[in-house]
Image (cartoon, rainbow, N blue to C red):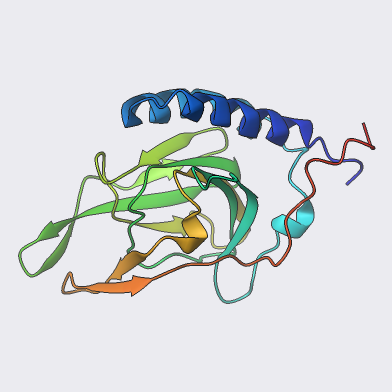
Length: 196
């Protein structure tokens, strides 16, 4: 790929930070944040291929940007063919936007003796966005919609998601705590303006 258009990601990060500076309620963050994320998903010339590489056994979670105050983080999720998450939660608000390929999200709710599916699975195709939070629904399993190709989604969370104490859910509904961390050791240098 030639010179990446990091301006798109810089603009998104700056606009989301400005929105959060106003300390809006969560409903406003999810609605306005979705509007801000949409233009980023309409172009595929800004994500460095180093942060779009699949792993043969499991999905990858690459940190692209973390707000200095840890109010939000931007992450690329890379799904190898047929890969999926366990059932898990987030404990913060989040926006999931599809960049390449497609993914399927199945929401769950606590039920007697375990978890029950909450509604039909939701498929996200490029440009589409789904919101999660403890208020609007926070427990789900996500999978690559394709068994024969890689999919990439861009996630924005209301915290440094790689450091948030969350849970995966067993079949009986019990929680297993985890902190996800990230797949990358280095961040993309989106602030270098020497290339245009």
